[in-house]
Image 1: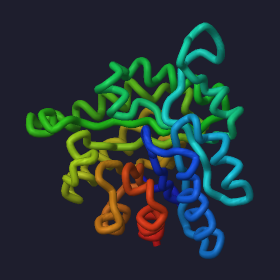
Image 2 (image 1 turned 30 degrees about the vertical axis):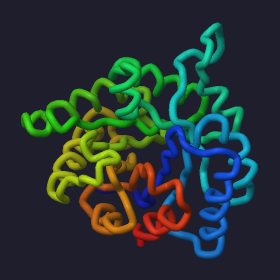
Image 3 (image 1 turned 135 degrees about the vertical axis):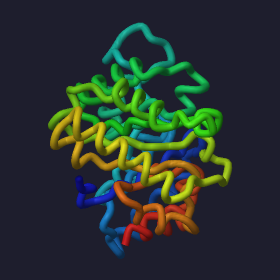
Length: 251
C-alpha cells in the first residue's frame, strides 16, 4: 500500500478569525507563490470568512474549506449551512466529524456518513475525522474504536471520489501531547488497510492526515511516518509563519 503522491496540509481555524485575520492567509499564499511546495494546502476558516478568503486567495493554489455542513441542501434548518452553500461561497472541501463535533455536539458515525454524502453531492472533498480519547487509548481500545469510526463514517459512495481521513487522537488536540511515531504509524497503517478493503483504489490512495498538536517542531518527523499523507493543523495554522514551517516540512 502506498501513500498519495501529494500530501495535504489543511489548517483548521476552528472558531477563530475575523476579517483582519485574512492577512495571515494571504501571507501563506504569497509565500507559496514565491516558493511552491510539494503538498496541497488548504485553510478551513469559520463560515463567515469562507467567501472573503476565497477572494483574498484568488489566483493562488491555496484551497479553502468549511468546518462542517448539514445533510440537507436547503430547508427550514435555522443556523445550519449546507454543503451547497459552502461550495457556492467558493469552498472546495469540508472537515466532517471533527472530535469537537463528536464530543460537544453529539455527532455520530452515522451522521458523519450522511454529511459525507452531502459533501459529495455538492462536489466538495470531505475530510473525515476519527480518533480516540485518552481513556480509550489507555484501555487498549484505539484500533477497535478507530476501525468502527472508519467503517461507520466512510460510506461506499466514496469509491472513485477525492477524500481524506484525518486521524486525530482526541487526547493530543491542543494539549501539547503527541503520540509516539510508532503509535501514529500503527493507527495510520490500520486505517489504510480498512480503506483499501472497503473502497478499493480510492481507499489505497486517499491521504490519511495526522491531527493533534502538529507544530513546526514535530511536523517533519510526523509527516515522514509510514502512511501519513499530510496533517490537519489546528492552532499552528492561525499564524502564517508557523503554518508555512509545517507545510515546508513536507520536503
